[in-house]
Length: 617
Image (tube, rainbow, N blue to C red):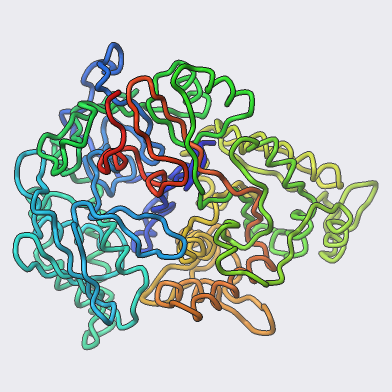
Protein backbone atom coordinates (compact mmCIF):
# COMPACT_ATOMS: atom_id res chain seq x y z
CA UNK A 1 0.00 0.00 0.00
CA UNK A 2 1.07 3.41 -0.22
CA UNK A 3 1.86 3.96 3.21
CA UNK A 4 2.85 6.57 5.56
CA UNK A 5 0.31 8.93 7.70
CA UNK A 6 -1.10 7.73 6.70
CA UNK A 7 0.94 6.83 3.95
CA UNK A 8 -0.06 4.54 1.31
CA UNK A 9 -2.30 3.62 -1.38
CA UNK A 10 -4.06 2.13 1.36
CA UNK A 11 -4.96 3.53 4.40
CA UNK A 12 -8.36 4.48 5.18
CA UNK A 13 -9.54 7.29 3.35
CA UNK A 14 -6.16 8.65 3.59
CA UNK A 15 -4.18 6.04 2.29
CA UNK A 16 -1.32 5.95 4.50
CA UNK A 17 -1.07 9.61 4.76
CA UNK A 18 1.50 11.53 6.52
CA UNK A 19 -0.89 14.16 7.21
CA UNK A 20 -3.42 12.89 9.47
CA UNK A 21 -6.52 14.67 9.26
CA UNK A 22 -8.69 12.10 9.51
CA UNK A 23 -10.01 8.81 8.62
CA UNK A 24 -13.65 8.38 9.05
CA UNK A 25 -16.61 10.60 9.67
CA UNK A 26 -16.50 13.65 11.86
CA UNK A 27 -18.38 13.21 15.15
CA UNK A 28 -21.22 15.50 14.15
CA UNK A 29 -21.73 13.65 10.88
CA UNK A 30 -21.84 10.02 11.97
CA UNK A 31 -25.12 9.52 10.18
CA UNK A 32 -23.33 9.99 6.90
CA UNK A 33 -21.50 7.25 5.06
CA UNK A 34 -17.84 7.19 6.10
CA UNK A 35 -16.91 6.45 2.53
CA UNK A 36 -19.06 8.39 0.12
CA UNK A 37 -20.19 11.99 0.32
CA UNK A 38 -22.89 13.38 -1.91
CA UNK A 39 -21.84 13.68 -5.54
CA UNK A 40 -23.07 16.60 -7.53
CA UNK A 41 -23.48 17.06 -11.19
CA UNK A 42 -22.53 20.70 -11.29
CA UNK A 43 -20.30 19.95 -14.20
CA UNK A 44 -17.89 22.68 -13.39
CA UNK A 45 -15.69 23.87 -16.16
CA UNK A 46 -13.55 20.94 -15.21
CA UNK A 47 -15.36 17.89 -16.32
CA UNK A 48 -14.58 16.26 -19.60
CA UNK A 49 -12.01 18.75 -20.77
CA UNK A 50 -9.95 16.69 -23.11
CA UNK A 51 -6.82 14.67 -22.73
CA UNK A 52 -3.71 14.69 -20.61
CA UNK A 53 -1.74 17.83 -19.99
CA UNK A 54 1.37 15.89 -19.07
CA UNK A 55 2.09 14.55 -22.53
CA UNK A 56 4.72 16.83 -24.03
CA UNK A 57 4.41 19.20 -21.08
CA UNK A 58 7.13 21.77 -20.50
CA UNK A 59 9.78 21.50 -17.83
CA UNK A 60 7.76 23.99 -15.78
CA UNK A 61 5.05 21.33 -15.30
CA UNK A 62 5.29 19.59 -11.94
CA UNK A 63 3.78 16.09 -11.90
CA UNK A 64 2.92 14.17 -8.77
CA UNK A 65 0.19 12.26 -6.91
CA UNK A 66 -2.01 13.39 -4.02
CA UNK A 67 -2.48 10.27 -1.90
CA UNK A 68 -5.01 12.06 0.30
CA UNK A 69 -7.55 13.06 -2.30
CA UNK A 70 -9.39 11.23 -5.05
CA UNK A 71 -9.89 12.74 -8.50
CA UNK A 72 -13.46 12.82 -9.74
CA UNK A 73 -14.74 14.83 -12.68
CA UNK A 74 -18.17 15.29 -11.08
CA UNK A 75 -17.01 16.36 -7.63
CA UNK A 76 -17.72 19.86 -6.28
CA UNK A 77 -15.00 22.36 -5.46
CA UNK A 78 -15.54 21.91 -1.76
CA UNK A 79 -12.84 20.86 0.73
CA UNK A 80 -15.37 18.98 2.86
CA UNK A 81 -16.58 16.66 0.13
CA UNK A 82 -14.56 13.46 0.34
CA UNK A 83 -14.07 13.35 -3.42
CA UNK A 84 -13.58 17.09 -3.87
CA UNK A 85 -11.19 18.30 -6.54
CA UNK A 86 -9.30 20.34 -3.98
CA UNK A 87 -5.74 19.45 -3.14
CA UNK A 88 -3.90 20.47 0.01
CA UNK A 89 -1.03 22.86 -0.60
CA UNK A 90 -2.06 23.53 -4.19
CA UNK A 91 -5.59 24.98 -4.32
CA UNK A 92 -6.58 24.10 -0.74
CA UNK A 93 -4.91 26.29 1.87
CA UNK A 94 -4.92 26.27 5.66
CA UNK A 95 -4.31 29.21 7.96
CA UNK A 96 -1.05 27.51 8.99
CA UNK A 97 0.82 24.26 8.42
CA UNK A 98 1.59 21.80 11.19
CA UNK A 99 5.22 20.99 11.90
CA UNK A 100 4.17 17.59 13.30
CA UNK A 101 6.23 17.96 16.44
CA UNK A 102 6.04 15.11 18.95
CA UNK A 103 6.97 17.34 21.88
CA UNK A 104 4.96 20.41 20.84
CA UNK A 105 1.63 19.78 19.08
CA UNK A 106 1.10 23.56 18.85
CA UNK A 107 4.11 24.03 16.54
CA UNK A 108 2.79 25.55 13.28
CA UNK A 109 4.38 27.42 10.40
CA UNK A 110 2.65 30.60 9.18
CA UNK A 111 0.75 30.69 5.92
CA UNK A 112 -2.49 32.62 5.28
CA UNK A 113 -2.15 33.47 8.97
CA UNK A 114 1.12 35.33 9.54
CA UNK A 115 0.83 35.17 13.32
CA UNK A 116 -1.56 34.32 16.15
CA UNK A 117 -1.85 35.02 19.86
CA UNK A 118 -3.39 32.62 22.36
CA UNK A 119 -4.97 34.15 25.45
CA UNK A 120 -3.57 33.33 28.90
CA UNK A 121 -6.52 31.06 29.69
CA UNK A 122 -6.16 29.24 26.37
CA UNK A 123 -9.75 29.95 25.32
CA UNK A 124 -9.25 32.61 22.65
CA UNK A 125 -6.85 32.89 19.75
CA UNK A 126 -6.44 36.08 17.75
CA UNK A 127 -5.36 35.40 14.17
CA UNK A 128 -3.61 37.94 11.97
CA UNK A 129 -4.13 37.38 8.26
CA UNK A 130 -1.38 37.99 5.73
CA UNK A 131 -2.29 41.37 4.17
CA UNK A 132 -0.81 40.14 0.86
CA UNK A 133 -3.01 37.02 0.74
CA UNK A 134 -5.31 37.11 -2.29
CA UNK A 135 -7.74 34.91 -4.17
CA UNK A 136 -7.13 33.80 -7.73
CA UNK A 137 -9.76 36.33 -8.87
CA UNK A 138 -7.67 39.14 -7.41
CA UNK A 139 -9.76 39.84 -4.30
CA UNK A 140 -8.01 40.07 -0.92
CA UNK A 141 -8.35 37.29 1.66
CA UNK A 142 -10.09 38.86 4.65
CA UNK A 143 -11.29 38.03 8.13
CA UNK A 144 -14.77 37.57 6.64
CA UNK A 145 -13.39 34.71 4.54
CA UNK A 146 -11.87 33.11 7.64
CA UNK A 147 -15.15 33.45 9.54
CA UNK A 148 -17.03 31.69 6.72
CA UNK A 149 -14.31 29.03 6.70
CA UNK A 150 -14.75 28.43 10.43
CA UNK A 151 -18.50 28.03 9.91
CA UNK A 152 -17.92 25.23 7.41
CA UNK A 153 -15.39 23.60 9.71
CA UNK A 154 -17.82 23.67 12.64
CA UNK A 155 -20.63 22.29 10.49
CA UNK A 156 -18.27 19.50 9.47
CA UNK A 157 -17.69 18.45 13.07
CA UNK A 158 -15.04 20.70 14.62
CA UNK A 159 -15.79 21.75 18.20
CA UNK A 160 -18.05 24.79 18.55
CA UNK A 161 -16.29 28.15 18.47
CA UNK A 162 -17.33 31.79 18.33
CA UNK A 163 -15.65 34.00 15.71
CA UNK A 164 -15.52 37.81 15.74
CA UNK A 165 -13.85 39.88 13.05
CA UNK A 166 -11.79 42.89 14.06
CA UNK A 167 -10.90 44.64 10.85
CA UNK A 168 -10.08 43.19 7.46
CA UNK A 169 -7.08 41.13 8.59
CA UNK A 170 -7.80 40.18 12.21
CA UNK A 171 -10.23 37.68 13.71
CA UNK A 172 -10.69 36.39 17.27
CA UNK A 173 -11.90 32.85 17.86
CA UNK A 174 -13.14 31.59 21.23
CA UNK A 175 -13.92 27.99 22.10
CA UNK A 176 -17.43 27.44 23.44
CA UNK A 177 -16.45 25.15 26.30
CA UNK A 178 -15.45 25.69 29.90
CA UNK A 179 -12.55 23.24 29.66
CA UNK A 180 -9.39 24.35 27.87
CA UNK A 181 -9.08 22.06 24.85
CA UNK A 182 -5.48 21.33 23.89
CA UNK A 183 -6.72 20.75 20.34
CA UNK A 184 -8.37 24.18 20.10
CA UNK A 185 -5.41 26.02 18.58
CA UNK A 186 -4.86 23.23 16.07
CA UNK A 187 -8.54 23.25 15.12
CA UNK A 188 -8.29 26.95 14.32
CA UNK A 189 -4.95 26.94 12.52
CA UNK A 190 -5.82 23.95 10.33
CA UNK A 191 -8.99 25.67 9.11
CA UNK A 192 -9.24 25.43 5.32
CA UNK A 193 -9.76 28.92 3.94
CA UNK A 194 -12.75 29.25 1.58
CA UNK A 195 -14.10 32.34 -0.23
CA UNK A 196 -16.91 34.11 1.61
CA UNK A 197 -17.95 35.60 -1.76
CA UNK A 198 -19.49 32.21 -2.53
CA UNK A 199 -20.15 30.69 0.90
CA UNK A 200 -21.79 33.54 2.85
CA UNK A 201 -24.94 33.13 0.78
CA UNK A 202 -25.03 29.41 1.65
CA UNK A 203 -24.41 29.64 5.40
CA UNK A 204 -27.73 29.96 7.34
CA UNK A 205 -28.26 33.49 8.62
CA UNK A 206 -28.77 32.22 12.18
CA UNK A 207 -25.77 29.85 12.06
CA UNK A 208 -23.64 31.59 14.69
CA UNK A 209 -26.64 31.94 17.01
CA UNK A 210 -27.19 28.20 16.71
CA UNK A 211 -23.52 27.54 17.50
CA UNK A 212 -23.78 29.64 20.66
CA UNK A 213 -27.11 28.08 21.63
CA UNK A 214 -25.70 24.57 21.33
CA UNK A 215 -23.43 25.12 24.34
CA UNK A 216 -25.40 27.82 26.16
CA UNK A 217 -25.71 27.45 29.93
CA UNK A 218 -29.16 29.03 29.84
CA UNK A 219 -30.63 27.11 26.89
CA UNK A 220 -32.94 24.15 27.49
CA UNK A 221 -31.89 20.66 26.45
CA UNK A 222 -34.52 20.77 23.71
CA UNK A 223 -33.06 24.01 22.36
CA UNK A 224 -29.54 22.60 22.44
CA UNK A 225 -30.65 19.44 20.68
CA UNK A 226 -32.42 21.42 17.98
CA UNK A 227 -29.38 23.65 17.48
CA UNK A 228 -27.14 20.60 17.09
CA UNK A 229 -29.58 19.09 14.60
CA UNK A 230 -29.71 22.31 12.57
CA UNK A 231 -25.93 22.58 12.42
CA UNK A 232 -25.63 18.92 11.41
CA UNK A 233 -28.26 19.41 8.71
CA UNK A 234 -26.27 22.28 7.24
CA UNK A 235 -23.09 20.21 7.49
CA UNK A 236 -24.71 17.44 5.48
CA UNK A 237 -26.11 19.84 2.89
CA UNK A 238 -23.00 21.93 2.40
CA UNK A 239 -20.76 19.02 1.32
CA UNK A 240 -22.50 18.95 -2.07
CA UNK A 241 -22.08 22.69 -2.70
CA UNK A 242 -19.22 24.56 -4.34
CA UNK A 243 -18.42 27.31 -6.85
CA UNK A 244 -18.44 26.38 -10.53
CA UNK A 245 -14.97 27.83 -10.96
CA UNK A 246 -12.14 27.35 -8.50
CA UNK A 247 -11.46 30.44 -6.39
CA UNK A 248 -8.14 29.60 -4.75
CA UNK A 249 -5.92 31.44 -2.31
CA UNK A 250 -3.21 28.81 -2.77
CA UNK A 251 -0.29 28.83 -5.20
CA UNK A 252 -2.41 27.09 -7.88
CA UNK A 253 -6.01 26.98 -9.05
CA UNK A 254 -7.83 24.13 -10.71
CA UNK A 255 -8.34 24.48 -14.45
CA UNK A 256 -9.67 21.11 -15.52
CA UNK A 257 -10.09 17.48 -14.56
CA UNK A 258 -10.35 14.28 -16.54
CA UNK A 259 -10.47 10.71 -15.23
CA UNK A 260 -6.68 10.33 -15.36
CA UNK A 261 -5.52 13.61 -13.82
CA UNK A 262 -6.30 17.00 -12.33
CA UNK A 263 -4.58 20.01 -13.87
CA UNK A 264 -3.83 23.19 -11.94
CA UNK A 265 -2.34 26.47 -13.16
CA UNK A 266 -0.14 28.85 -11.19
CA UNK A 267 -2.12 31.49 -9.31
CA UNK A 268 -0.41 34.82 -10.10
CA UNK A 269 -2.19 36.43 -7.14
CA UNK A 270 -0.75 34.02 -4.55
CA UNK A 271 0.93 36.12 -1.87
CA UNK A 272 4.32 34.46 -2.39
CA UNK A 273 4.04 33.67 -6.09
CA UNK A 274 7.71 34.43 -6.78
CA UNK A 275 8.69 31.31 -4.81
CA UNK A 276 6.56 29.00 -6.93
CA UNK A 277 8.66 27.60 -9.78
CA UNK A 278 6.14 25.39 -11.65
CA UNK A 279 3.65 27.11 -13.93
CA UNK A 280 1.42 24.03 -13.91
CA UNK A 281 0.78 21.04 -11.66
CA UNK A 282 -0.52 17.71 -12.90
CA UNK A 283 -1.90 15.37 -10.22
CA UNK A 284 -2.11 11.85 -11.61
CA UNK A 285 -4.93 9.50 -10.71
CA UNK A 286 -4.06 5.99 -9.57
CA UNK A 287 -5.68 2.90 -8.12
CA UNK A 288 -2.81 0.73 -6.92
CA UNK A 289 0.81 0.69 -5.87
CA UNK A 290 1.63 -1.01 -9.14
CA UNK A 291 0.38 1.99 -11.08
CA UNK A 292 2.59 4.34 -9.06
CA UNK A 293 5.56 2.04 -9.67
CA UNK A 294 4.87 2.32 -13.40
CA UNK A 295 4.85 6.11 -13.20
CA UNK A 296 8.12 6.08 -11.24
CA UNK A 297 9.88 3.63 -13.54
CA UNK A 298 8.99 5.78 -16.53
CA UNK A 299 10.31 8.92 -14.81
CA UNK A 300 6.96 10.70 -14.98
CA UNK A 301 6.73 11.87 -11.38
CA UNK A 302 8.69 14.75 -9.87
CA UNK A 303 7.59 13.64 -6.41
CA UNK A 304 5.76 10.50 -5.30
CA UNK A 305 4.31 9.89 -1.84
CA UNK A 306 5.30 6.90 0.22
CA UNK A 307 4.45 3.78 -1.71
CA UNK A 308 5.05 0.26 -0.45
CA UNK A 309 7.80 -1.34 -2.50
CA UNK A 310 9.80 -4.53 -2.36
CA UNK A 311 13.59 -4.32 -2.27
CA UNK A 312 13.78 -5.34 -5.94
CA UNK A 313 11.15 -2.79 -6.99
CA UNK A 314 12.94 -0.05 -5.05
CA UNK A 315 16.16 -0.93 -6.86
CA UNK A 316 14.35 -0.79 -10.20
CA UNK A 317 12.82 2.62 -9.41
CA UNK A 318 16.12 4.11 -8.25
CA UNK A 319 17.82 2.92 -11.43
CA UNK A 320 15.80 5.50 -13.37
CA UNK A 321 17.69 8.71 -14.14
CA UNK A 322 16.95 11.41 -11.56
CA UNK A 323 15.02 9.20 -9.12
CA UNK A 324 16.08 9.24 -5.47
CA UNK A 325 14.47 9.09 -2.03
CA UNK A 326 14.00 11.34 0.96
CA UNK A 327 12.72 10.04 4.28
CA UNK A 328 11.62 10.95 7.76
CA UNK A 329 9.67 9.58 10.68
CA UNK A 330 6.10 8.41 10.13
CA UNK A 331 3.39 8.51 12.76
CA UNK A 332 1.47 5.54 11.40
CA UNK A 333 1.47 1.86 12.21
CA UNK A 334 0.02 -1.07 10.28
CA UNK A 335 -2.13 -3.16 12.59
CA UNK A 336 -4.78 -5.82 12.69
CA UNK A 337 -8.09 -4.63 14.14
CA UNK A 338 -10.50 -7.05 15.78
CA UNK A 339 -14.28 -6.80 15.51
CA UNK A 340 -15.31 -7.82 19.03
CA UNK A 341 -18.93 -8.04 17.96
CA UNK A 342 -17.96 -11.30 16.24
CA UNK A 343 -17.23 -14.31 18.43
CA UNK A 344 -14.73 -15.50 19.55
CA UNK A 345 -12.89 -12.20 19.07
CA UNK A 346 -14.75 -10.78 22.07
CA UNK A 347 -12.52 -13.07 24.14
CA UNK A 348 -9.24 -11.31 24.99
CA UNK A 349 -7.42 -14.65 25.25
CA UNK A 350 -8.24 -15.37 21.61
CA UNK A 351 -6.87 -11.98 20.61
CA UNK A 352 -3.73 -12.56 22.65
CA UNK A 353 -3.30 -16.01 21.14
CA UNK A 354 -3.51 -14.57 17.65
CA UNK A 355 -0.90 -11.95 18.60
CA UNK A 356 1.57 -14.52 19.88
CA UNK A 357 1.07 -16.65 16.76
CA UNK A 358 2.18 -13.86 14.40
CA UNK A 359 5.84 -13.38 13.56
CA UNK A 360 5.93 -9.60 13.11
CA UNK A 361 9.56 -9.57 11.98
CA UNK A 362 8.79 -11.94 9.12
CA UNK A 363 5.55 -10.18 8.17
CA UNK A 364 7.40 -6.86 8.09
CA UNK A 365 10.27 -8.26 6.05
CA UNK A 366 7.84 -9.66 3.51
CA UNK A 367 5.37 -6.77 3.44
CA UNK A 368 7.46 -3.67 4.24
CA UNK A 369 11.11 -4.57 3.84
CA UNK A 370 12.09 -1.13 2.54
CA UNK A 371 10.05 1.20 4.71
CA UNK A 372 8.75 -0.60 7.75
CA UNK A 373 10.10 -1.52 11.17
CA UNK A 374 8.50 -4.33 13.14
CA UNK A 375 6.51 -2.88 16.06
CA UNK A 376 8.16 -3.32 19.45
CA UNK A 377 4.77 -3.83 21.08
CA UNK A 378 1.17 -2.65 20.87
CA UNK A 379 0.22 0.60 22.61
CA UNK A 380 -1.80 2.46 19.96
CA UNK A 381 1.23 4.72 19.26
CA UNK A 382 4.38 4.34 17.17
CA UNK A 383 7.65 3.53 18.91
CA UNK A 384 9.00 7.09 18.66
CA UNK A 385 5.97 8.43 20.55
CA UNK A 386 6.14 5.52 23.01
CA UNK A 387 9.65 6.71 23.87
CA UNK A 388 8.24 10.09 24.92
CA UNK A 389 5.55 8.76 27.26
CA UNK A 390 6.27 5.19 28.30
CA UNK A 391 9.78 5.03 29.69
CA UNK A 392 9.88 2.42 32.44
CA UNK A 393 6.41 1.08 31.65
CA UNK A 394 5.97 -2.69 31.93
CA UNK A 395 4.34 -3.78 28.68
CA UNK A 396 3.90 -7.15 27.03
CA UNK A 397 5.84 -7.22 23.76
CA UNK A 398 3.89 -10.24 22.42
CA UNK A 399 7.06 -11.66 20.94
CA UNK A 400 6.39 -14.50 18.50
CA UNK A 401 5.73 -17.66 20.51
CA UNK A 402 3.57 -20.56 19.29
CA UNK A 403 3.69 -22.06 22.79
CA UNK A 404 2.28 -18.91 24.38
CA UNK A 405 -0.33 -18.75 21.64
CA UNK A 406 -1.40 -22.28 22.64
CA UNK A 407 -1.61 -21.26 26.31
CA UNK A 408 -3.84 -18.30 25.44
CA UNK A 409 -6.14 -20.37 23.22
CA UNK A 410 -6.50 -22.90 26.03
CA UNK A 411 -7.39 -20.13 28.50
CA UNK A 412 -10.01 -18.97 26.00
CA UNK A 413 -11.69 -22.38 26.33
CA UNK A 414 -10.56 -23.70 22.95
CA UNK A 415 -9.41 -27.26 22.48
CA UNK A 416 -6.89 -28.62 20.01
CA UNK A 417 -8.25 -31.68 18.24
CA UNK A 418 -6.15 -33.44 15.57
CA UNK A 419 -3.90 -30.40 15.33
CA UNK A 420 -6.78 -27.92 14.88
CA UNK A 421 -7.95 -25.41 17.48
CA UNK A 422 -11.71 -25.68 17.94
CA UNK A 423 -14.29 -23.54 19.70
CA UNK A 424 -16.70 -24.91 22.31
CA UNK A 425 -19.19 -25.89 19.57
CA UNK A 426 -16.53 -27.96 17.83
CA UNK A 427 -15.98 -25.59 14.90
CA UNK A 428 -12.42 -24.75 13.83
CA UNK A 429 -11.11 -21.40 15.08
CA UNK A 430 -11.09 -19.28 11.93
CA UNK A 431 -9.05 -16.10 11.64
CA UNK A 432 -9.31 -14.76 8.10
CA UNK A 433 -7.43 -11.54 7.33
CA UNK A 434 -9.13 -8.87 5.17
CA UNK A 435 -7.16 -6.48 2.95
CA UNK A 436 -7.91 -4.24 -0.02
CA UNK A 437 -6.88 -5.31 -3.50
CA UNK A 438 -3.87 -3.36 -4.77
CA UNK A 439 -2.28 -2.76 -1.37
CA UNK A 440 0.82 -4.80 -1.99
CA UNK A 441 2.32 -4.54 1.50
CA UNK A 442 -0.90 -5.58 3.23
CA UNK A 443 -1.43 -8.43 0.77
CA UNK A 444 2.11 -9.79 1.16
CA UNK A 445 2.13 -9.44 4.94
CA UNK A 446 -1.37 -10.91 5.16
CA UNK A 447 -0.19 -14.06 3.44
CA UNK A 448 2.66 -14.36 5.92
CA UNK A 449 0.27 -13.91 8.85
CA UNK A 450 -2.20 -16.52 7.57
CA UNK A 451 0.72 -18.92 7.17
CA UNK A 452 1.77 -18.32 10.79
CA UNK A 453 -1.76 -18.93 12.03
CA UNK A 454 -2.19 -22.07 9.96
CA UNK A 455 1.08 -23.42 11.35
CA UNK A 456 -0.26 -23.29 14.93
CA UNK A 457 -3.57 -24.98 14.04
CA UNK A 458 -5.78 -21.98 13.24
CA UNK A 459 -7.85 -21.97 10.07
CA UNK A 460 -6.80 -18.82 8.24
CA UNK A 461 -6.87 -17.35 4.75
CA UNK A 462 -6.36 -13.97 3.13
CA UNK A 463 -9.46 -12.27 1.75
CA UNK A 464 -9.24 -9.27 -0.56
CA UNK A 465 -11.88 -6.63 -1.22
CA UNK A 466 -12.30 -5.69 -4.87
CA UNK A 467 -11.21 -2.11 -4.31
CA UNK A 468 -10.47 0.33 -1.54
CA UNK A 469 -13.87 2.03 -1.53
CA UNK A 470 -15.60 -1.34 -1.11
CA UNK A 471 -13.16 -2.29 1.62
CA UNK A 472 -13.87 0.88 3.60
CA UNK A 473 -17.62 0.57 3.19
CA UNK A 474 -17.70 -3.07 4.29
CA UNK A 475 -15.30 -2.36 7.15
CA UNK A 476 -17.58 0.39 8.47
CA UNK A 477 -20.52 -2.01 8.31
CA UNK A 478 -18.72 -4.52 10.53
CA UNK A 479 -18.41 -7.24 7.87
CA UNK A 480 -14.83 -8.24 8.73
CA UNK A 481 -13.88 -10.03 11.98
CA UNK A 482 -10.18 -9.20 11.47
CA UNK A 483 -8.79 -6.62 9.05
CA UNK A 484 -5.71 -4.55 8.39
CA UNK A 485 -6.08 -1.10 9.90
CA UNK A 486 -3.89 1.98 10.19
CA UNK A 487 -3.22 2.93 13.78
CA UNK A 488 -1.11 5.37 15.78
CA UNK A 489 -2.14 8.43 13.79
CA UNK A 490 0.02 10.86 15.74
CA UNK A 491 2.19 12.62 16.52
CA UNK A 492 -0.08 13.77 19.33
CA UNK A 493 -1.40 11.08 21.64
CA UNK A 494 -4.93 12.51 21.35
CA UNK A 495 -5.03 11.70 17.64
CA UNK A 496 -3.53 8.26 18.21
CA UNK A 497 -6.16 7.28 20.77
CA UNK A 498 -9.05 8.74 18.81
CA UNK A 499 -8.06 6.15 16.23
CA UNK A 500 -8.38 3.31 18.73
CA UNK A 501 -11.15 4.67 20.98
CA UNK A 502 -12.98 7.03 18.65
CA UNK A 503 -15.93 6.72 16.29
CA UNK A 504 -14.84 3.38 14.79
CA UNK A 505 -14.93 1.91 18.28
CA UNK A 506 -18.15 3.52 19.50
CA UNK A 507 -17.09 6.81 21.10
CA UNK A 508 -18.11 10.22 19.77
CA UNK A 509 -16.46 13.34 21.17
CA UNK A 510 -18.87 15.49 23.17
CA UNK A 511 -17.52 18.56 24.96
CA UNK A 512 -14.51 17.41 26.92
CA UNK A 513 -15.82 13.84 27.10
CA UNK A 514 -17.37 11.21 24.85
CA UNK A 515 -20.72 9.52 24.22
CA UNK A 516 -20.77 5.78 23.58
CA UNK A 517 -22.79 3.97 20.89
CA UNK A 518 -23.56 0.27 20.96
CA UNK A 519 -21.81 -2.15 18.60
CA UNK A 520 -23.08 -1.73 15.07
CA UNK A 521 -24.47 1.75 15.74
CA UNK A 522 -23.13 5.10 14.50
CA UNK A 523 -20.04 3.63 12.88
CA UNK A 524 -18.99 1.37 15.77
CA UNK A 525 -17.53 -1.70 14.06
CA UNK A 526 -14.65 -2.49 16.47
CA UNK A 527 -17.06 -2.99 19.39
CA UNK A 528 -14.77 -2.85 22.40
CA UNK A 529 -16.66 -2.87 25.72
CA UNK A 530 -17.75 0.53 27.02
CA UNK A 531 -15.97 -0.26 30.29
CA UNK A 532 -12.80 -2.29 30.76
CA UNK A 533 -11.18 -3.66 33.90
CA UNK A 534 -7.55 -2.59 34.06
CA UNK A 535 -5.05 -2.14 36.86
CA UNK A 536 -7.65 -2.73 39.55
CA UNK A 537 -10.27 -0.33 38.31
CA UNK A 538 -12.99 0.10 35.70
CA UNK A 539 -12.08 2.37 32.79
CA UNK A 540 -14.19 3.94 30.07
CA UNK A 541 -11.43 4.11 27.43
CA UNK A 542 -13.27 6.43 25.04
CA UNK A 543 -14.08 8.89 27.80
CA UNK A 544 -10.49 8.74 29.01
CA UNK A 545 -9.11 9.20 25.48
CA UNK A 546 -11.34 12.25 24.98
CA UNK A 547 -9.81 13.95 28.02
CA UNK A 548 -6.49 14.14 26.18
CA UNK A 549 -7.83 17.16 24.32
CA UNK A 550 -7.98 19.12 27.59
CA UNK A 551 -5.10 17.74 29.64
CA UNK A 552 -1.42 18.68 29.62
CA UNK A 553 1.77 17.93 31.53
CA UNK A 554 1.83 15.16 34.11
CA UNK A 555 -1.92 14.57 33.89
CA UNK A 556 -1.67 13.96 30.16
CA UNK A 557 1.31 11.65 30.61
CA UNK A 558 -0.54 9.61 33.25
CA UNK A 559 -3.57 9.31 30.96
CA UNK A 560 -1.44 8.22 28.01
CA UNK A 561 0.32 5.59 30.12
CA UNK A 562 -3.03 4.23 31.29
CA UNK A 563 -4.44 4.07 27.75
CA UNK A 564 -1.25 2.50 26.44
CA UNK A 565 -1.34 -0.12 29.19
CA UNK A 566 -5.02 -0.87 28.55
CA UNK A 567 -4.45 -1.19 24.81
CA UNK A 568 -1.48 -3.46 25.40
CA UNK A 569 -3.49 -5.62 27.78
CA UNK A 570 -6.81 -5.86 25.89
CA UNK A 571 -5.54 -5.72 22.28
CA UNK A 572 -8.42 -4.10 20.39
CA UNK A 573 -5.72 -3.86 17.73
CA UNK A 574 -2.40 -5.63 17.23
CA UNK A 575 0.38 -3.54 15.68
CA UNK A 576 2.56 -5.24 13.06
CA UNK A 577 4.99 -2.53 11.92
CA UNK A 578 5.71 1.18 12.09
CA UNK A 579 6.09 2.88 8.73
CA UNK A 580 8.94 5.07 7.57
CA UNK A 581 8.02 8.18 5.64
CA UNK A 582 9.96 7.25 2.50
CA UNK A 583 9.16 9.43 -0.50
CA UNK A 584 10.48 9.58 -4.04
CA UNK A 585 11.81 12.66 -5.84
CA UNK A 586 13.15 13.13 -9.34
CA UNK A 587 15.80 15.79 -10.00
CA UNK A 588 15.58 15.77 -13.81
CA UNK A 589 13.28 18.82 -14.01
CA UNK A 590 13.37 20.39 -10.54
CA UNK A 591 15.87 20.58 -7.70
CA UNK A 592 16.08 21.68 -4.07
CA UNK A 593 13.82 19.22 -2.26
CA UNK A 594 13.42 19.07 1.55
CA UNK A 595 16.09 17.10 3.38
CA UNK A 596 15.63 13.93 5.42
CA UNK A 597 13.56 14.37 8.59
CA UNK A 598 12.21 17.79 7.57
CA UNK A 599 8.79 18.61 8.99
CA UNK A 600 7.76 19.49 5.45
CA UNK A 601 7.79 15.80 4.50
CA UNK A 602 4.53 15.41 6.42
CA UNK A 603 2.93 17.96 4.10
CA UNK A 604 2.21 17.95 0.40
CA UNK A 605 4.80 19.19 -2.17
CA UNK A 606 2.61 22.24 -2.77
CA UNK A 607 3.50 23.25 0.80
CA UNK A 608 7.19 22.60 0.12
CA UNK A 609 7.02 25.15 -2.71
CA UNK A 610 5.57 27.77 -0.37
CA UNK A 611 8.72 27.58 1.77
CA UNK A 612 11.15 27.97 -1.12
CA UNK A 613 11.67 24.34 -2.11
CA UNK A 614 11.26 22.74 -5.55
CA UNK A 615 13.05 25.15 -7.83
CA UNK A 616 13.48 24.90 -11.59
CA UNK A 617 16.63 23.05 -12.47
